[in-house]
Amino acid sequence: MSWLDWLPRRRPPPPIEDALWRDALAACPLAQRLSANDVRKLRLLAARFLQRKRFHPIEMELGALQRLLIALQSCVPVLHMGFRALRGWTGVVVYPGEFKVRHRHHDAATGVITEGDQILNGEAWQIGPLVLSWAAVQQDLQNPWDGYNVVAHEIAHKLDMLDGPPDGVPPLPRGMSWRRWIDTFQSAYDRLSRDVAAGYATPIDAYAATNPGEYFAVVSELHFSDPARLDRAEPQVAGLLRAYYGPSPV
Ligand SMILES: [Zn+2]
Image (cartoon, rainbow, N blue to C red):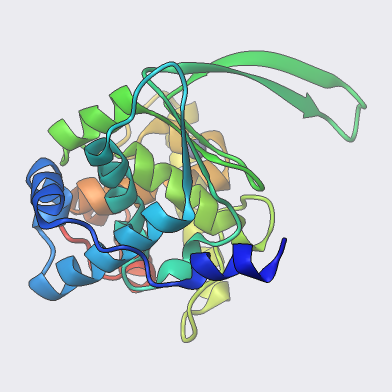
């Protein structure tokens, strides 16, 4: 890559037009809950997101407002960390609805490779794009406080993968104890796994018991869409997420 190719990407991003920004805010209740100062910060981050990331709509058109709504929700989780937390990937693949992926899993102990099809609403690869279903994004915009947010979920995976495979432990800001994070999340994860195995209805979606990486992504969704439920179910996890992401905008 030549210097000239590289330089434009470091230039300040083109500002988001007022009318487009107003439409995006009107469609995103999560952003409406932010302070005026945070909304200003979010606008700058979203402009940078649109400048640096590449959208790849599959079998659909993706208009400026749709792109901005994805950018905006991707930036809310990093409002206090800054844009650098979204480094290491550029693609945003968007499907109109749920999509099917074929996963290969290689079990090192047995040498067995299993392949399976999965129907998904979102996916984040360690090196690779963020993958979203527009239908799921839209559903979250319409039901912002139901405990689900596919963009927050996938961004949580991206943050978790900044230091290697997803393990539920993202790089922590200075001053946060790594030991405390692991102890707190491990006991919460174990509690949920026990309850799910016993067949109880759990306040945290049972999908979180899949593995520690999914646990972190699912409780991150709650932080941005139903923090009161998380606070009741796992107050210590809720407290750590407040320290990590900043207070929930909800
Ligand atoms: Zn996930």
